[in-house]
Length: 140
Length: 140
Image (tube, rainbow over all chains, first blue to last red; front, side, top):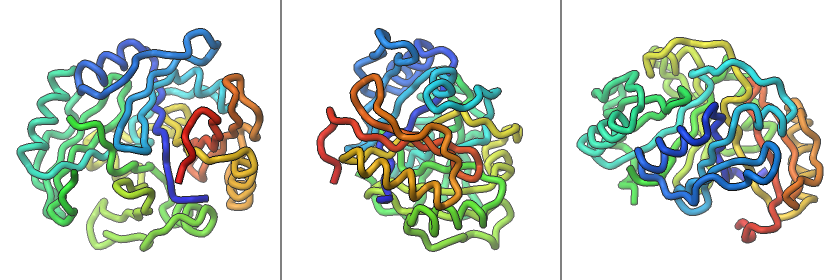
């Protein structure tokens, strides 16, 4: 297996609400909801960096397609990291997320390892960490 | 916010077991567990394509750092997609995952949209989809 992830699919309970959050609130590029003609097929894709997409898909459809049991939402299954190049950028994005309706669980602050970060939850409780790590190269 | 994810962090219950699965079973490159000198800091990173890392971190540490409540594991929160260039590659990776101890929830099969895919779960129940999509460009 090559070290590669091409799509990160988030399980959601309300596709339209999640679309509004990511498209209008965070400004991620998308063609909106597609695949509605297929049972369990309605999905929206957002283009991230080249070679990586974010998708939102109903939790019940993930359960159906992957043949697993639909379970109660859980916030501690994963986080998505969004690295930026300065503390000011962290603050700007945390504010953008707040305005978009995110839940700020952990306002941005200096970290024990010398960085600066904060966490927010999307409408389905999924965690994002917005982070400046001074040891990382500048991100284009 | 720029359309970018730099780190995908998976919440796990046993860091060592997850490390063995991803490093030895799936062959993802890593320097192993680091940060053990910090409370809530033990983590392992795997290098994926340029600009993207996979991380494994204890669920309880995610809860602590993001200031959320630790919840029961749930399989339908997200999936990670691993696109490849042929049906044979899908089969090879599903077999590799099985040998690594993954739970195959959905053996590879032709999909309604003209592709070929299967799903497996890692030791913490996290879902991966291995997929060939004939409409995608060849993946390097």
